[in-house]
Amino acid sequence: MLSLRYVTKGIYFIFPVIWFVMMPLIIVFTGVVILLILITIAKINAFISFTLVCIYVGVMMGLPIETIVEAIKKGMGDTLGLLVLILGFGSMLGKLVADSGAAQKITQTLIATFGLKKIHWALMLTGFIVGIPMFYSVGFVILVPIVFTVAASTGLPLIFVGLPMLASLSVTHGYLPPHPAPTAIAGMFGASMGKTIFYGFLVAIPAIIIAGPVLSPRFKKIKATPLKEFTGQNILDEKELPSTLISIITALMPVILIGFSGLFTKVINEDTIFYPFIKGIGDPVIAMLLSVLFAIYTLGIRRGKRMKVVMDGMVQAISSIAMILLILAGAGGLKEVLVASGISDYLGRLLSQSGMSPLILAWLIAAVIRVSVGSATVAGMTAAGIVLPLASNPGVSPELMVLAIGSGSLMLSHVNDGGFWMFKEYFNISVKETFFTWTVMETTISIVGILVILLLNNFI
Image 1: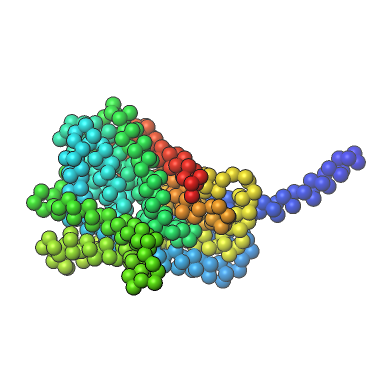
Image 2 (image 1 turned 120 degrees about the vertical axis):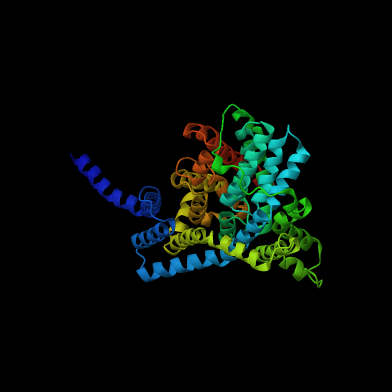
């Protein structure tokens, strides 16, 4: 009896200690669960859901309401300060590339170059080139009808032809600035945009090849018969298209400018008069602005379009990203509440003691949230807020952390992901076939991505 009484007292003493130590982790876990329930079950708007969870986490950690509101405002402001410019200019550039027929011209040229036997490689490159300046959903809607036309004219299986292009769009969306999540996460981690893009290319290439041209022949037997309302859209006459050179240069201009700046600032003396200008054009905001101005001329004015028509198209492009900006702002607010409450530092210390690689942890957390929420953007931003303290650890590359989170945010897309249903409906296949094609492709991208990132980590 004596020993039992001591054991009971010990339990009563230890349990509060365990609860106190684990409470921040429990609060974060329940916060994420509440976020998932609000978005997926209650169907509440993601921006409202993020704001409610910010308040919940702050209150549970004992922060005054005034402090919580200030943290939300700071987090949203810090996040949107860069993204309003990047996403605004990015949506404008994407609209110009789409409406002018530049995306269509790039597709036609690559198909003619690669030939019928390697047509899926041509469409893979199309998706990669066009996907850099264009949001995923926009690139999907613009390029899929072209895929349908190519498949119909060649007689090749639609999944075989289209999946490599969609793999490219997905990779650029998850890994590469100026897309929303990679750009925002790079800013949060203080990562070099030039290095992030460069390393992102190194990760993207094998991920796209394996998930696209290597994987797609396995799905030749799946018969996809797209609905008529999804075919034949946005196809312009040949005489209406810009040249191939102009189309490619304009679509890739942000990457060209940032890459040019990163390269030449390494070889030019800082005291020269040209150094500030060359360094300046490598800033993502300046690069995007210059790219939009270039596109206005090459794909608009130079081709006889009136300025009002071009500007009206840009207004439409901006209106399409309003909700994306609000969702990203909400995620930024949650990140700042985690920092202000001390949870972020606590989780950083806890995770750093686990012995697991910070890159694997970042990938794993993003993957779990992605599977739960469905949105790659939400998964990436939420995971970034949780693992942010790990980026300050010695030997951890912030650029590779950005890519690890991006890789995890693409993991195992299923029924709670809008991209899953877009693919199913456009290609008119069953849910089971969508799992065997789309979900397998997204999972392959994620796994190959983290493996390449871990490999790169040995050389950086």
